[in-house]
Image (cartoon, helix red, strand yellow):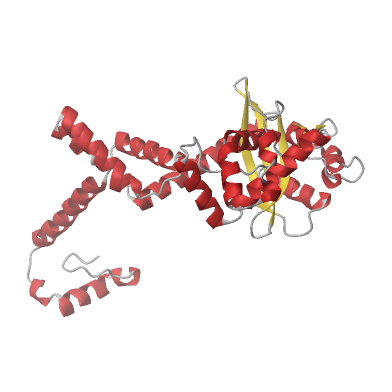
Length: 346
């Protein structure tokens, strides 16, 4: 940059001949100035740089506090802007009232702009990822995989990993990758194998695989289990406990199954219509019930069924009133026998 103006000169312009021509054409009034004048200009620029650097510098404690606050914002799933609009002003107010203005000024040095919080979160994520990969490269581990479809009907492979670190068994999410082709065992295995290769994770450290009972996963000849054992013969395959519980829960008595089926119809009748859901919530509020809505249940998780039926039992009077007011005679009776001891959560 030219000392006499804010113009940035190209590298080729640093030649003495071109510098002299620049001085004669654009700064002719400084031709007779002594060398001390230009030295003072250089010193002024250096002082300005140091002052600007001092203003923008962040103390180590402020930087550490910025990372801690960003981490908490991420855990609470809040917008990044909450740091500078709520958390920092609130912290400054509390410190100023409790300890004085001098301490409050130190808090104002903590950078919590929304873009800064975003960068901090990315840094934390990368650091956690590096720690996880480094542990898997030196420790025995097992993974649990499941193929899921999102609301856009795109298939994804989700993998969780369990490993040993400092004599403790830890569990983390390993990856969630899209399945571009068919959800076959070979396609799923290629995703896992490519991930291991990209991150230099050795199959020798792989000791266990947990999947659901689908043939593409559990098949001992052409399933994922068989393909994994070709890479890690010592690995043990297990069937997911949640899926096993779901299979067991299907073998219930005819009486219990009848109650469960009818309660599902009641829940779907009320919750599938936004209008009926609002009216039911208003009715529960008028009758001073503990809850104002019913619960859906997850097909895979047996505990969600228990919670769902428990909620139906607790709102049985409100459900009866609502169904009678809506003249839905087909669903009026089932809730009266919902209090079966198997379903009531203790």
